Length: 154
Length: 141
Image 1 (cartoon, chains in turn orange, yellow):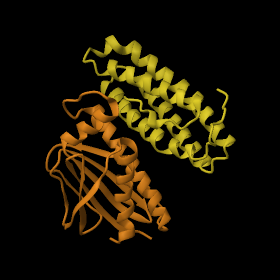
Image 2: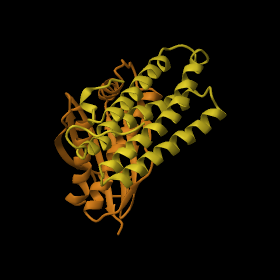
Image 3: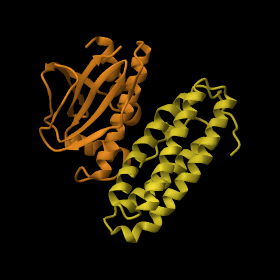
C-alpha cells in the first residue's frame, strides 16, 4: 500500500468529523497486521472497486458510537440498535465516498459498495491483501480503529 | 436533531428551509424513539415521510436555482447528489408501502436520513456559501 492510497482515507475521516461535529481527529499508532481482527463492537466494512480493490473497515467502540449519534440527534441513546447502526453506517459511507474523491485526485478511479454493518466483539474479516494497515484514531477521548486493505487493480 | 446557526449559508430562503427540515426531522425522531408501539405513531411516521418526499423536492429546486444564480461551479455534481437522494426516498417509500409495520426498515432509513442530512448541510451546502455575494442574494421559493 502506498501513501497516496492511504492519506485520502485519513484526510476524509478528519474532514468529515470536523465539518459534521466540529471534532478534531488525530492519527495515533500505525501497525501492519495479518488480518482484520476487531476489538470493538460496531464494525462497518466498505468495499472498494475500480483501480483499487479492497476494504476499509471502521471499528468503533460503543461509547463513541452513542456519542456521535447523540451529537447528531440531540437525544440520549442507551445501546446500539438498528437506528444507531444505520446512522453510523452512513457516516462510514460518507467518509469513504469522500476518500474516493481524494483517490481520483491521485489518478485512481474507484467506487464503493454499500456499507456492511456487523455488531459484536472480535469479528474477523477476509481481506484482498496479505497485510492490513491498522490506524488508531483518536477523537473526543475515544479511540477507534481504521483497517485498510487495498491492492492496486490497474 | 439540533440546528446550529453555523449551518447558515447566508441566503434567507435556503436557511429557513434547512431549519424547517431539521425541525421536522427532530419532531419525527422524538416520536419515533418514544418507546410506544408502532401502531400509535404510524400517523406521524406517514406524515413525516410524505412531507420529506415533497419538501425535499421544493428545497432542492430552490437550492439549485441559487446555484445557477451565483454560477456555482459544483452545480452538476450537487444536482447528482440531490437526484440520488430523491431516488433513495422513492425506493424507501415503495418498501415502506409494502411493509408499513417493519420497524427495522423504518429505523434503518431514519438513521441514514439523519446522518445524510447533517452531512449534506454541513458539507456540500457550505461550499455554495463561498459563492454567495456579500449582502446575500434573493431566491424565489
